[in-house]
Amino acid sequence: MKERGGQSTRLARLRRLMRERRISALLVTQREHVRYLSGFTGSSGWVLVTPARCVLVTDFRYQLQAKREAPATSLVIQKKDIITTVRETARTLGLRSLCFDEASLTADRINAFRKQGLGMKDVKDPLTDLRQRKDAEELGAIRLAVKRAETSFLELRPHIRPGVTERELALRLEWLMREKGAKRAAFDIIVASGGNGAMPHASVSNRRLRSGDLVTIDFGAEAKGYYCDITRTVCAGKPSARQREIHGLVLRAQQQAIERVAPGVACADADKAARDIIAAAGHGGEFGHATGHGIGLMVHEAPSLSALSKATLAPGMVVTVEPGVYIPGWGGVRIEDMVLVTERGRKLLTSLPRGL
Ligand code: ZN
Ligand code: ZN
Image (tube, rainbow, N blue to C red):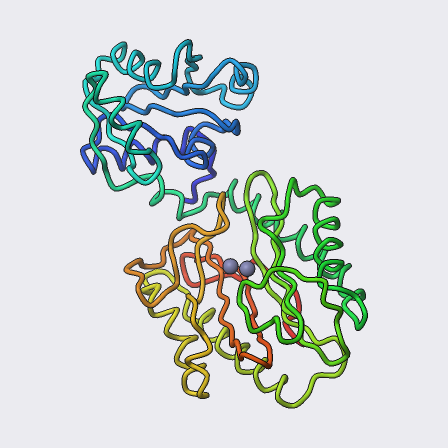
């Protein structure tokens, strides 16, 4: 059965994983984890999870917001510092030690807990694993983010012409996405024209587009805390034979990788599907980044579609597929779409035309 989502389902899934990993009490400190688990969106708040209790610790500024956003979670407002409050809460719950994810708790805070007499044990973060597989509520938010980004891009399309600057295009696109309800752009929008396209993460410049330039636009919108991430490379004018050739190559590589995405497939194999095609055409050295990444409450999250990844695709995962070819002195092409892993295969979440 498909899980609908919601905080109680997520908490149940987490507790199941905690039992499997013999975690009796988990301190959740990463902001996106806190939001995923409790609904609380404030900038300062930790969650303490045991088999029976789920407690959100935050400060006075967020008292009302926490009550509204996280009604199912017990609330503790810190009176002193957060370390002391968490330690006192742990004592009340009869806990002598806590598990934590070392990636999101600094060493000095871990030491501060230990000085206060609380045992601290680092564990493989169960929430990062859980968050890879999106529930229906999360997919709804991601689809909304995609819709905001794609309709904005279609409105931007007529403005992509000689004379306009990269910066003007980036600003207009951000304005369009925020006008449609996105709280923010998912990241600094990339508009890389002409030779700038050879830099995969070029920053936007005041360069004016010239007729026949390729323009790579990498962008994403936000919706309900979730993000999307899309790239299109288009031509300001009539594309040359060489531009069509490189674009066609990247498109074929992307299509192969998308078709490789399915439950049970190694992420490294999905990466290889794109990489092999680009290498066979003699451009292997010009594709130096991973083929894709998971996306959700963060733009880049697990799993990674890279040669080094040990992860396996599973239903509910949402990944980008974004091969590219970057040629110094000439420019570059990247095409990026978002794919949902389903029970039987895959579903494309993005639908913008991919042509030049
Ligand atoms: Zn991107
Ligand atoms: Zn991406």
